[in-house]
Length: 620
Image 1: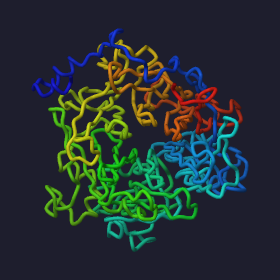
Image 2: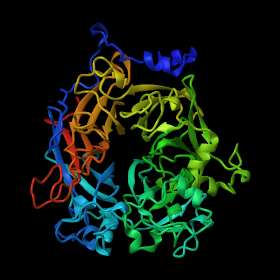
Image 3: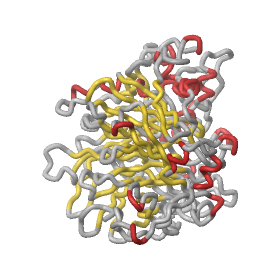
Image 4: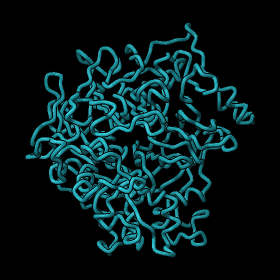
């Protein structure tokens, strides 16, 4: 057992040498948790799903969301049209059964994050737009189309005769964009560091940006998370600006969008506090299309990948979060109050009061949640924090001072209520040097990532201590230098690299989606893999779904009965920037035309519904 080796005091290098793939003897092989026939791994212009299943496009970029939305025409785009249509680069998905329906698992609301935009794939003849290229082709109209394509969508969906369809003209339908008014709440709301010329009270902000993964709460709300918010800001801070250190720690200015030319709030020289109003978890009630989204500042500010939660033994809500950056951290937020499971309104502001913590992974296979609380440890005025608002606005710096463990790009973190375990997706870190490895991040130049499993003390997600171990180190097990540790039962199609998001189905089974696989890196496209977490087959992975060339696999989410698996196909046709031989993708020459296969149309991000042919639970 890896934890016993660590407790024996061996050096990390020696530990790494012992972590060979676990052999699975035929005599001890139990019935498979995932008995579907495995999908061959590859890469082409289409999507593919394991035999016995069907995968159908449910909704695509530009399809109507609001009543009266105009038909999609990529050659005649406008911000007004996009604000009524399905946005770009769909990421997190969440499903909410509609109360009172005859089939709650077959009729509900689907919520969708729209993370970011690819101008080169959206606009004919434009090409890539960023600071290095001087935003040569950008204008106000294009920038405002992009702003309208960000945010999120709420759509009503229904299964009829075994097929999923979007319900047209739904009273719940909603588009949220980069200009939707939102409320700031919690300890940082009203802070002087959140005040701007347009909002002297520091309590109202326009829009949400770069919303990656998220979560669904027990009281029926959608948590959507702002990730790479630094991308949207340009300019230089005023000389001697007090925000200089803070902005540098979050990578500002990112200079990847030219919006500041037309909207001064994205210009650091004019509004140095505007970035502090982004990088939060946003709570939205999908059943209230006129409700004001709320940025819950008590949960910290950083590059949130997700905010998936579970109930503690005493009924409090525990939200796990990853900060998607090399050498950043894994976080947890625990509410002060228990969730009221019979009165939704009683939970309205439950996420405004609680304790944010950051993880330290010790070399003995145990770990501790360190409170990110003003006045505790180094989080004091002597270190530049005046109150909890300062701590939350500068969550990363607070975690630095606390001595949290610097991880290899923590992305999705999901709890498994069936087993009491927690799974951390660590995508990669090619910048980690040999002298920077530690027990929880055991490979230098970690190109393929790994998955860490946490076991909270006493089986309680709110416990301050946990045991941990690496579930799998990703990559091709047939190449010894890679150091992958999938079980020996994993086939040549079953291994993967770059774990990103994950989902735990109603049976407690773990499904992993990936970001970064490509023909040039792994010989395969991104997709969904089923991963065994218990018993003799622990560490065995099976390939289930494959996305088209250039796409990233996002948003895995099951209906309550496990009969439908919703997934999001993001940026199909995008070029691999890390492949020196890749041809730059454009609207006219993407890597794929999926799902339309029409040269007059760009490749369109889309949500796909996966069902088992003939009915039954997916993956069986």
